[in-house]
Image 1 (cartoon, one colour):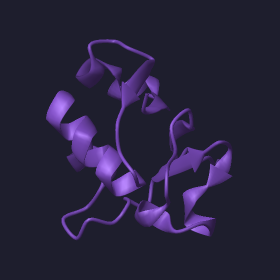
Image 2 (cartoon, one colour):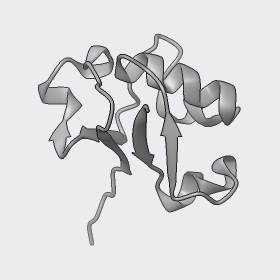
Image 3 (tube, rainbow, N blue to C red):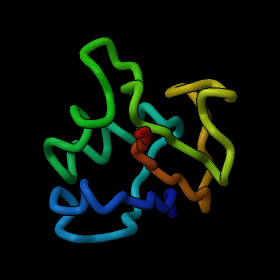
Image 4 (cartoon, rainbow, N blue to C red):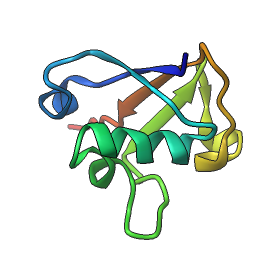
Length: 92
Protein backbone atom coordinates (compact mmCIF):
# COMPACT_ATOMS: atom_id res chain seq x y z
CA UNK A 1 0.00 0.00 0.00
CA UNK A 2 2.76 2.49 0.87
CA UNK A 3 2.46 6.10 1.90
CA UNK A 4 1.11 9.17 0.15
CA UNK A 5 3.64 11.96 -0.29
CA UNK A 6 2.42 15.49 -0.94
CA UNK A 7 4.80 17.22 -3.33
CA UNK A 8 5.26 21.01 -3.16
CA UNK A 9 4.67 22.94 -6.36
CA UNK A 10 8.38 23.77 -7.02
CA UNK A 11 9.24 20.03 -7.10
CA UNK A 12 6.31 18.81 -9.18
CA UNK A 13 8.23 19.08 -12.44
CA UNK A 14 10.25 16.11 -11.13
CA UNK A 15 7.10 14.06 -10.39
CA UNK A 16 5.49 14.69 -13.78
CA UNK A 17 3.28 17.40 -12.24
CA UNK A 18 1.77 15.06 -9.67
CA UNK A 19 0.77 16.76 -6.41
CA UNK A 20 0.59 13.42 -4.55
CA UNK A 21 2.62 10.29 -5.19
CA UNK A 22 2.44 6.80 -3.66
CA UNK A 23 5.78 5.50 -2.41
CA UNK A 24 7.07 2.56 -0.36
CA UNK A 25 9.49 2.80 2.54
CA UNK A 26 9.73 1.76 6.18
CA UNK A 27 11.37 5.07 7.15
CA UNK A 28 11.57 8.59 5.72
CA UNK A 29 15.09 7.84 4.48
CA UNK A 30 13.96 4.69 2.66
CA UNK A 31 10.99 6.59 1.27
CA UNK A 32 13.37 9.19 -0.20
CA UNK A 33 15.46 6.38 -1.74
CA UNK A 34 12.34 4.92 -3.39
CA UNK A 35 11.28 8.38 -4.55
CA UNK A 36 14.70 8.93 -6.11
CA UNK A 37 14.36 5.66 -8.04
CA UNK A 38 10.98 6.77 -9.40
CA UNK A 39 11.74 10.48 -9.76
CA UNK A 40 15.47 11.07 -10.35
CA UNK A 41 16.83 14.33 -8.97
CA UNK A 42 14.28 14.67 -6.19
CA UNK A 43 16.40 13.32 -3.32
CA UNK A 44 19.30 15.72 -3.90
CA UNK A 45 16.90 18.64 -3.49
CA UNK A 46 15.67 17.27 -0.16
CA UNK A 47 18.77 15.76 1.45
CA UNK A 48 22.40 16.84 1.68
CA UNK A 49 25.48 14.76 0.84
CA UNK A 50 25.54 13.41 4.43
CA UNK A 51 22.00 11.98 4.11
CA UNK A 52 20.47 14.65 6.33
CA UNK A 53 17.41 16.70 5.54
CA UNK A 54 18.30 20.10 4.10
CA UNK A 55 17.69 23.02 6.47
CA UNK A 56 15.08 24.64 4.24
CA UNK A 57 12.98 21.49 3.86
CA UNK A 58 10.32 20.54 6.38
CA UNK A 59 8.79 17.07 6.37
CA UNK A 60 5.66 16.08 8.25
CA UNK A 61 4.26 12.59 8.85
CA UNK A 62 0.55 12.82 9.59
CA UNK A 63 1.09 16.50 10.52
CA UNK A 64 4.00 15.72 12.91
CA UNK A 65 7.33 17.42 12.12
CA UNK A 66 9.97 14.69 11.71
CA UNK A 67 12.56 16.96 13.34
CA UNK A 68 10.72 16.30 16.62
CA UNK A 69 10.40 12.57 15.88
CA UNK A 70 13.38 10.54 14.57
CA UNK A 71 14.33 12.68 11.57
CA UNK A 72 15.01 10.62 8.45
CA UNK A 73 14.81 7.49 10.62
CA UNK A 74 11.15 8.23 11.43
CA UNK A 75 9.15 5.03 10.91
CA UNK A 76 6.34 4.92 8.37
CA UNK A 77 3.35 2.62 8.12
CA UNK A 78 0.96 1.91 5.29
CA UNK A 79 -1.54 4.68 4.83
CA UNK A 80 0.60 7.46 6.35
CA UNK A 81 0.61 10.86 4.68
CA UNK A 82 3.94 12.63 4.30
CA UNK A 83 4.02 16.32 3.42
CA UNK A 84 7.17 17.97 2.05
CA UNK A 85 7.06 21.71 2.78
CA UNK A 86 9.82 24.06 1.67
CA UNK A 87 10.64 26.72 4.27
CA UNK A 88 9.63 30.23 3.37
CA UNK A 89 11.61 33.17 4.69
CA UNK A 90 10.04 36.54 5.02
CA UNK A 91 11.22 39.96 5.90
CA UNK A 92 11.21 43.51 4.94
